[in-house]
Length: 305
Image (tube, rainbow, N blue to C red):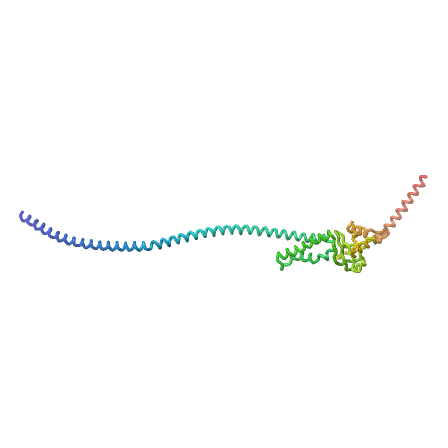
């Protein structure tokens, strides 16, 4: 019993000695670790302070740069909006321009057709004596649309010149005018002379004064034909008018129809001659029929008595 207690006491003493030695060793290690951690903490705090100082130094330039970038972004957005509105406006303008161009093209086509029709009507209403006077203007206006070397503007200018000429002609027709030209006399000779036009009536006098009459159109002829006056007084009045010593204008109210009717009139002999050989049996049969009718009439007359 005493031996056991002694052993326990010795073990306790030995354990206590070992525990104390281990405690001293652990305390020293903890102190070293604490110092290391403290040093790292101090270094981290110092590094944190340096980083804060660096951030504080760079924060103002970065804020300034951020403000500049935000301002630039706002300006770019504004420019984008302006460009978008401008693009939309130009798109609308382009659409309106296309519509206007199409409308102008339709107007141009209509005007071209209208001028072409006017030229044809103008030519058809000219007196035969005026064809020489307006020949160049008519040819220029009619051939202009077919000339591929001319622009649309030049084509319109050529047609507009004829329009201007037609307006001048209207004034001349109302007030009367005279112009030089050529005409075919009753003998079929072409003579140079002067035309005097008042309204729809035209008279002509040759340069030698030997041919005076109304200017009319003959079928199949491109030149005006001269029909002499039937009355000497009309011829004298026309000669005085050309000489500038008279103001009487010999007017044909029938517009040449009287001459045409006169030309169609023919005698009985001329009418028979136009019938040719077939007229011989016709007259023979007519004579026989007349003799039979006379014979019958005489027979009936004697029967009554």
